[in-house]
Image 1 (tube, rainbow, N blue to C red):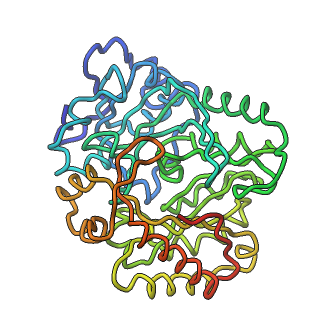
Image 2 (cartoon, rainbow, N blue to C red; image 1 turned 45 degrees about the vertical axis):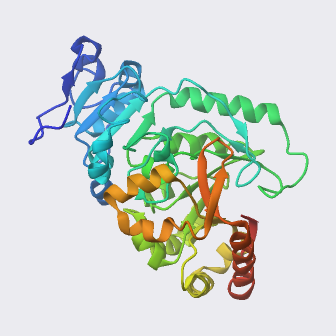
Length: 397
């Protein structure tokens, strides 16, 4: 159901209204949830990214404490019941949404209950991939892999059963015990990626899910949370992670970012925030990704690395590490991008340089050919050694 032209004075209900009684969902006052603190005023960053007018919610998700918190944060949004957060006909599989790619991310939110709680091994950026508390993003990076699976629309889906997600992680951490030996993920702690299919910094604009995850790990001496972000959310500085959360700022040359990292924080702002996050108790690493091969890429990456070396405080450099990831693309996403941001595909879709690749999750993607990728990875390592020798690549591929 499309949003109305004017915001209604309060939440509007669609289908089986009895499943969403206002008195129950809003703590009897119509303005605040029963089990959560009243929502804080929206930040300027939230206003820029989110103008939520339509919330699709599973009944259980809407009735939960976290669901109530989110509904109270967006009181003028139309509330629409759905049977499943994965099956929303006018969102998923609707090719017409390509023309509204960014608008859908801005105006639409989905609330669901995560049914499957599985922590699976990784071994690259983290030892384990945790069950995420969200799926999708309000940003619109042209190379993002998540919308490949969602079909023409990729708004944020918030999983409101955060209590069960945290409990699952606590049990998993307890079973692992002490890490027996160092590896590329961390020398002492088991590292859990808690934001595989979204951006936890953006999620924190919507609910306390990210805060709950950070609080859950700060008392775990054998484990760390980890997530990558392209968004500087300074509200996270107040969460006291006590060294048990690793934030990985993704960076690339600004010339690429302006074209590809749509709606994200400027690269210089991400870099400038590193010292503040370290001082607030986070471990701060960097993702050099994606590396897009184009004329002049080596010079631009060298300039970015020199900028990192010039502006980062010594304390950040002393503990920093990096992941280097060359671009992987996908034909389906290529077709979507042609409908809303074709200029990006001039950089991303390079059949002359790319070959087919079957990813770990079974997707059919394209990556740079072996004879192209190997030398590029080696060249990135040389640039890091020359311009930011303190930055240890944890892996590069």
